[in-house]
Amino acid sequence: MTDYFDSSDAIPDADRQQQWFANLPNALQQATSDCSGLAKHLQGHDLKAVNSALSLASLPVLRKSDIIDAQTSRPPFGGFVNENNLSGCRVFMSPGPVWEPQPNGGDPWQAARALHAAGIRPGDRVHNTFSYHNTPGGFMLDEGARALGCVVYPAGVGNTTQQIDAIKHMSSNVFIGTPDYLQILLDKAAEEGRSISSIKAAMVSGGALFPAMRAAYKEAGVHVQQCYATADLGVIAYETATDGEIHGGMLLNENLYVEIVRPGTGELVEGDEVGEMVVTRMNPDYPLVRFATGDMSAWLDEPSPCGRSQRRIKGWMGRADQRTKVKGMFVDPIQIQAVRRKHDAIQQLRMVVGRANDRDTLELQVHLDPMVLSAPSAEQLAETVKECCGLSAEISFVDTPLPADGIVVDDTRTYNT
Image 1 (cartoon, helix red, strand yellow):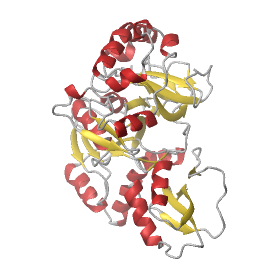
Image 2: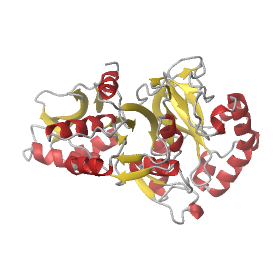
Image 3: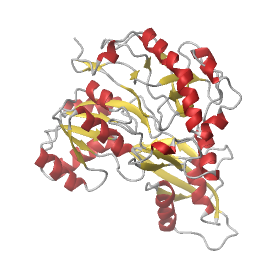
Image 4: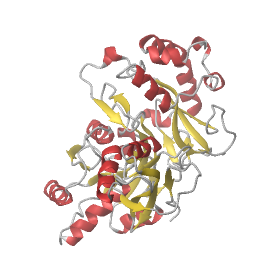
């Protein structure tokens, strides 16, 4: 029998949706009363009548660019946050940039349910390697693990030798971080002749968990499950398993309503058609209505073999735009163009995301203007990429012009091996 996180996991989904839509009109009216930017975005719509999937689909899609524009003209939050509720909270800056508050309450990003589904329990010792700097990734899983009753070591990123020291000293049995970084720690421990075999379970996110990677971790004695999360919404969906056997797709989290639409529109897809995930979260601190994630997926209509009743998606199936997640961080075309603006000699550039030795790679291809004499060096460009993107990249100077195909971020990774 499945060990549920709480009774919500077993509620018939029809009942779950009926209750959610029954509460929606009042929630929308309250949200637009508290958040002037959201009110402006939804102006002209009868929110009292939004009480079904069809009526919700009549509302406009909210895109990250809309929030960025609003925050630029009306800092800090553009009217999309209930600023009366911010006392004692944290604020983060995600790529874009987008300024986002941490909602109030325990487990504000709803990570505990996903961790529980991965077999993580009260008293477990968690080694959390997501960054606690600028973006909410570290706090997102940290808050969920502590709400679940775990002991958390906030490792963050880097300093692998010190991280191995901490794992050994704490006898940590749970890893949290990107899929790649667990292998980095295992390799570093082996290189130093040490063992971190106390790690038996892992929750990963922020990057692709390739089948070969999962198999390698299983061989190393680590059961790995993944969740799908965004800085704006928290944990949207997560994997489940029965007796260690991973089930296909991901279950949707509670207190969210997910639609799948044709990219660039608000039109709902039909059947198992792949489209862009649009999410509504009526959190009183930071409500988001039909927020476009930019991530692609499709519905899995059959119920999960684990017995939980939430709807399932097939998982992350790519981006509807060129914004690409690398090592847990988004690389956005806006950031790449910022690199270009800092160096007059750059005529064209393209960030190529690849995969080598089970690691994500970044290569900035640069075509310089031959008429400009003061060309930047590879070292200078690498520093600019680090400044604009928060990640390191190899720099390649290209003699011939790059294709005029509009591609700024080229993700060449494949996800089936």
